[in-house]
Length: 421
Image (cartoon, rainbow, N blue to C red; front, side):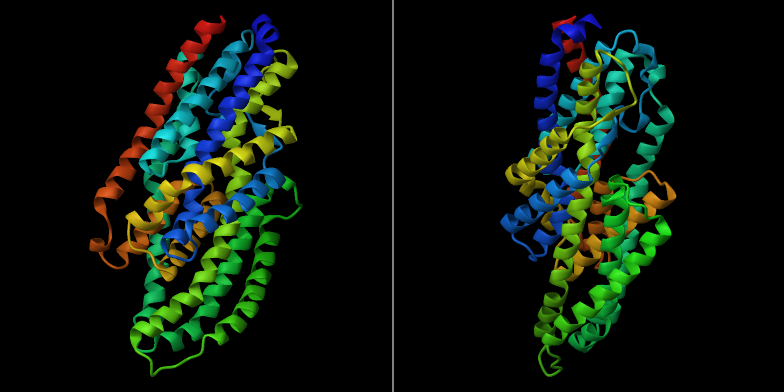
């Protein structure tokens, strides 16, 4: 207790710096999952994508971010053994923030799309083992995370593969792709409106405490989907049907029909991401803030002041603006060649998979789902359409995230303990 009273202000300043660094890493790495397909397909250029994401990520973090966040991220460790020495939790949260941020910096420089959630969880596990004890870690939850390395990309990839095959069969591979686009694009437009509104209502607005259950969200999403369909049909009519033009020209006009759909979806995904994953950066910061304010009382949950949410949103925007383009290039250009139709299938499938997984409680990673969806789109054109070397490097980065973040956190924990104890 005395250490927290003595160094409370210093701990808070360090937590703010480390928290900003961590949210910078989230912006540099994780945000690209929502925007990478838009950039890779040519629907948005990098500067516009960054501007769009900056607005919606910040709004998501500020308006719908968790005002009460679990400070022990996802209940990964039990802090019961350190209630008499709360400064240990301060060292641990600071170590977790810095360790996860360093790993995200390395991954972003390399262009690896890794999970920010897994980064902070791995870091907290590393601190938990050395700071509290091996038994403090909820190992069943770690097993679920390991399982998500397989479950997430497979689900996202399967959904994208099916959607891409349907689009090829109904539109792209037909003798009259433009005419068939006029026929079937409204169905995909409905899917856009439905999925985007559902992911926003469930993932992006859940912290605003809107009294809307899953059935209500489903009904409202169907109505929004129908509204998007009606508005979109009017725009599609402007792209006239001319069966006399060659296939290349028809395909180009089909791609123009699908390009706006990706932008619309990317905005909603950025909002949902800002509202949810900002907690990975501000959760440990909120824990330190709560400990300093309470004089050392250890709590599983802490109220999050608005300034912390603003800090988190600003960090995400800063990371996206400075280094986000590297991971965007990996997602959008290096795994497989993307066009607006392919990017549409990948983005919608990723969003739909996140919704279904959240609903039935499957342990999945949004990052892994997004990468899996891009791989699934590539597989629809055959395995030769994939850059297997890039895919292999991404998978290796996923596997190393937990142990690397954990080891870094353990080292930083002992360093902080040595400085302040």
